[in-house]
Image 1: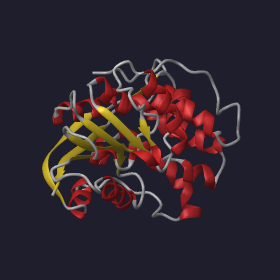
Image 2: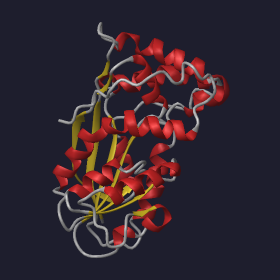
Image 3: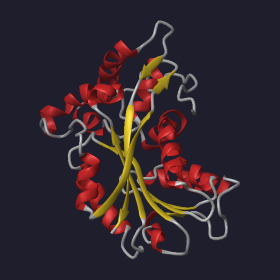
Length: 283
């Protein structure tokens, strides 16, 4: 299993009370946080048998690590990200540098990628590795993206959606939930939510998908120190509402306190998590 304990990073937010700039958050995402979901991505690709000749469209592809893993298996890849489009430029650089990635037309990213799942031959997969269960309305938003992604695709196109596991088995979700209470005076108590048992099934049912199976994957978030943990979690975008409601220094302080029970005597931070995935096909 891919190690998720990242190398030590120097202080950043503690010295700068201003809200993290986009470039800073992108750097922290790619250097610290993004790799935490690699076990989930690899498990999904193994479950669906992704290999040479396959075609993948990833929804919420971010900086493209999931696409690089798919390209390494010989698949043609495309990705969209409507929530964090600033990451697509990084994804493009990565994919152009991936030795196993198809290079005839270059990586297909952004608006041009929406129809990619309906083009060409070979098995098709539409996947979302942005886990459901941390934001109000995230299921409806994913459903709209699935509808657009599946336009023009043949019947039987494979679809994978992912979500946080049970709250009691997701330490990171508990930490995020604690800090996101800072948003309540501004956004109200319904701005965030805990994962529901049937989140993925509800999305698949609303999209008219035929269920094939599901699974759970352990994805612990490991950091060399609290500073790196704070930076990594801030880079997810899941605390943007808290950053808007207050300042970065306060959010970082609350994060540090919430992380204290998960900090080991040697200073490392370990957050055990379980994520779910659901495999389905278009009808």
